Length: 640
Image: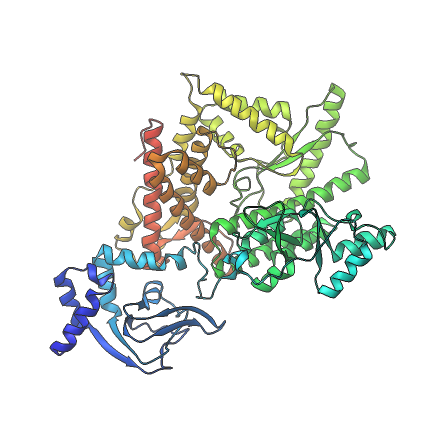
């Protein structure tokens, strides 16, 4: 290599991160393995789908366009001192984009073998590329999916081309509203009184309410409008809108200004809009669920939702959102089952129906909205306190039968069986008995009692009278406050101790240094050694801080990080580690299902790429740091 080229390459690398962080001797050793390559405008540097990865490209001059040619989505444009090609080197497999020279371009090419050597030997160099590609591997907060396409599901709603809403006052005749819909080519009109949003009317409302009730054409539209209106802010994502529609069972959302959500509608977002911007349609699944008339028809829903979750996961939707969406879809199945079973019991009349409010709750992963393909149907039932012994006997018989039928139906729908279900007498109780049960767990539990109780602190109502859950949680908070005064017993300390019992004897990287082949099975239990320690740590901190706003682990960790400044860094790192573990777990399960195998949590670490191994190690380290912080906070000795 001539001295001029050597000088030229040295100057380029010294001006380009992360090469600028390398020691001088390492940079000198590197120069003989870097070559200069010239490209004309239109030359393809990397073909999409190619499995040959010659090395890392550094742009010296010109412009390179990275594009998903299948979808024609631009990923980025690389200019002077920009790098490309690292993702393929670390991830392996086929290239996820095409790299093409937009104009005459000169690149320096570092051979893949020597890139890998630098990656292994220089931590700062490796950290730069880990950070750069985490958005692909962890799929966090990005508009770009794993294939490089712009991920519209993550786009803010106020960035979408939505038209201004059509409005009318509530005394407008229904016939006139229908005419305006036709003229304006819209399927929804907002009802506004004195600049205040009061309702919404859709074409479905006009067909189903106006026609079937035999109302006159001059009838005010307020007679058939839907209220309250479900609104959403412009900063929310398209995915947030999708989840809102699923949860509220609506086909339209009103986009409002963040600072004036009650009065100023900006646009109307329909289910058709979501489908247009996105593709696969969980909303269609919800529509199917709501119109199914027998339990047998629900049996295909779990398979259908698995396919949809896989598609969304491949698009790069973060695991936190996926598990929440999966929980929402599973909630809809359970809600429809409850509606069908209630109808059957009402038609049969045996046992006789009891006129008492009641609520169906999820506990465990379902309660936390963190369901995956292996999640069991942990649930329970709470009903209002009976007013007499006779009513108590009738209530016990009725709700026991309801619980048995629903849990059996959910098993038919594909939910794994569990002992922790409302079909069991100990988990189908009146409110007073539930209060006593929680107080027993809080005041009297030994280690076995804590093990039984912990999933119930993740309770969440999905059907029925929410006020019963609210009253129960208020009583739980009172009991925790009383228990905190007891110097002899420390329920939270026992809960914290359980979060410390899940620990590998060797770190992942230590295990990978053992003389094993890539095909050798070396199982890492993602659930027991990664997920559970974080879930249980977040739970005990939430109870300690009396945070009952959400049972979701991500939400609990966010709250704790704000409430405990001294632990903020540890908790934020634990949340990111948990995000990666949850993503890896779901991806692993979907991969097994796609191959016709039953899903599990047993990951072969030798089957991971080098990047995945490093990120898994980082997540495991974050879990270990969280456990150490928990041990210190609750004065516990951490197990070796």
